[in-house]
Length: 268
Image (cartoon, rainbow, N blue to C red; front, side, top):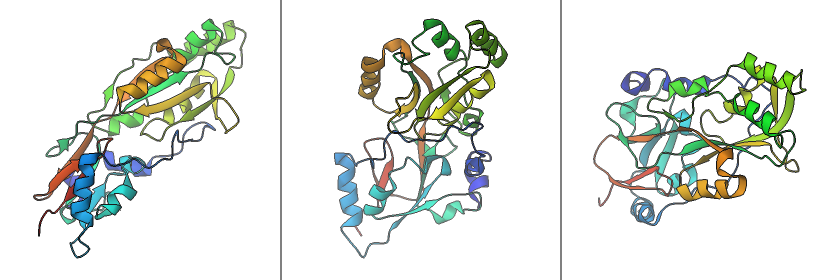
């Protein structure tokens, strides 16, 4: 049975998504590999300490390729495959990814993607310009391909209204600002979606302070850090992504500290 028929139709097609509509290029906020939680380390030891044990066949949906801790999973005796529409679901012991699917179990983790404004940088230091830019935020259509996504922000204006408002503030051809985006599904499309409103977001290089950042977080303490740095009114929660997994058999399970399942065959 193919993956498409087994769990979803459109979700796995994320692998074929086209490029973003603006010059904005993704700049991951962090390249650090997620670490295993203490309880997950036990499962890793069970799975990895016995070299003769058959590896667990672990399938990852393409929407989670940049977020499932692949190296940590491999070290825990997982044989990782990025799934596509030709994959045979019966050939995997466990499958996981963003979204809610029939027969799958949700983990407790659900990262939220937020848009953060730096109002110390012009022109966002002008409250009127900031208000207009806020109105340019759009929820990426790609999220419709991830069932169970919780949209937490409702756009309040259309592109033409934003263009007119910017022109009235002295920006008849729009503005150019700099930004960074995490690699969560849809994050890169948020700044790209502002182009229709004459707001061009260029990728901030190392020496360039970003006007906006699209950041994913899975711990409230991380959000509080953003609020402390930029102000509560400048941290806008856009959407929350569920994480689910499917087990094809009986396994011992534990979870990484950011919610990804790690499994072991247990005692042989």
